[in-house]
Length: 475
Image (cartoon, rainbow, N blue to C red; front, side, top):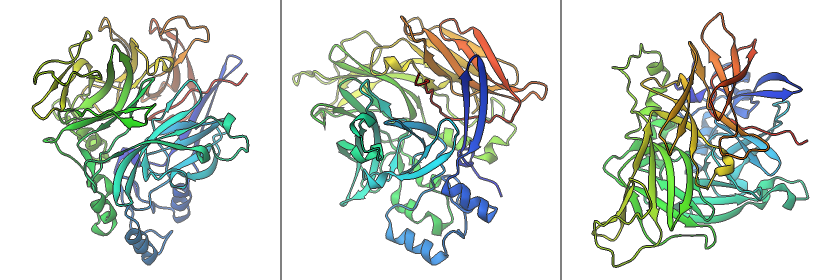
């Protein structure tokens, strides 16, 4: 048996540890309930987003039917394969379901299973939280059919210092804000959100989950991914939440239909909110990663995915109600515009900063602040990147690293302990080599010059990963 989609495989954790000038490599499967169930049955028995399994020996068919009929949302997998999240002093493997798994970052051992629903009423949540200087973790999730309403929730988890009894940091989770979804039974899909010092940015894109279809997918013999659809004739809504009042600002902001997964950064400037995202014109990216499509003999002419574009939107917060329709309300230096329409809503058009980059990372010390540099994977017509780039937003210059028959993972920026400039630091990326004569390796680049500092070759199978985290030594 095999999975239908590249994002469905069993979660494999891996780590590179620096100690006294040496680099140690370790990898281990996440021992999730999904993993254990599949291993016990010796086949795929737990459904993933793009792969539905039939039947499930972990539950008899009557139990399964009851589960699907008694819940608006089906019971999801705990195969947490997207990112590592920090809550307090604890680290968790995460995907986008309501389950996360606590892990030991040293040994990569799998610890307890945590259900968000025990602490906040979210059925799905992002794997891209935000962290502030006080150690709080902010995240976003969707509550489906809660008291007859479907809404997006922003919640905050305080640092462990306020949690002296050593119980789960999520016990102190606080709901900051809830936003009603435009469509009760088809909320927007999202993978990340934006945050500035005073505001949170939620983008409600017209890429939507059909809850009724999801709840009946098992019986209809289709996967959950088929229950997501893109509506290119609808608007993309921008919700701006004030952290102090815990309420969205009154004005309604929107743009044309788009699909996005990753926020790059957001900040405030002279009464405006600037937020940058990597956007697409449709949802063909997910389709590209079906194994049947990846196995095709791809060429530039047959590629089915649209090119990602690095887009800057600017939302003006100080609006004059007397402003005429069609007048640009943006008063800072940018090609992005925001104009009032005849309904009194604000239509935003982006500035295109560059094309062809994904998996963006920044110096996180500049998160929520005006910034200059972004580090990313460079993709052309292939779904898998072959280059790492550093993009200068001011000069529009791009520095590139590439190596023959090598496939880089998301670049991770680590600041120098005594950094004086934004790009003082190094870039880490695990590189998969498809050259049988060359091992895979951890790449270390100087973030300022993009020159190679070193590489640590690994005599083991290294696999392409999605997202990761750098954990500094406590000493």
